[in-house]
Image 1 (cartoon, one colour):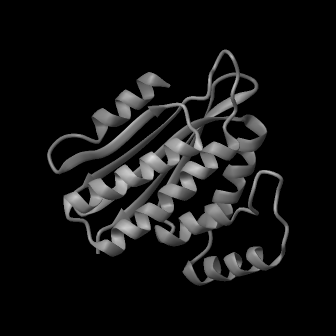
Image 2: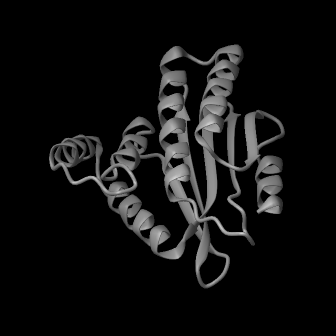
Length: 180
């Protein structure tokens, strides 16, 4: 996990690229607040448009909440995750990665694959349908966070699952936001 974090940071630095904020370690509600505040402050300092800052803030909150809700923890693995917010010319990329149980990773992948097939109108309709069906899981929502991410980044996201052992995988999600 540490090497993957370092490699990702290195890939996001260079001409026209800049890491705005990043974090690697444990996740809790206090860190969500700290990371969201720091990211918003840094974006303001970088001169990002206010509408872009709001989009990134909303996406970041949803991504971090998903990490908090779905992370697998164990004595051996701990509860590591990383978050990187970087800029590449007029585009921002928000990357999160955490360790999740394989069954959870499959459910998230399936949901994201379905969202990727939808256009903006379909995403909005799907959001309203899920919001009104009152079927919330024990872990919080009914997939509204993933739909919100897809809507806010105009479906410009990628994801990857890397198996770590027979029980858990590293799940990485990247959202791309244009500063327009």
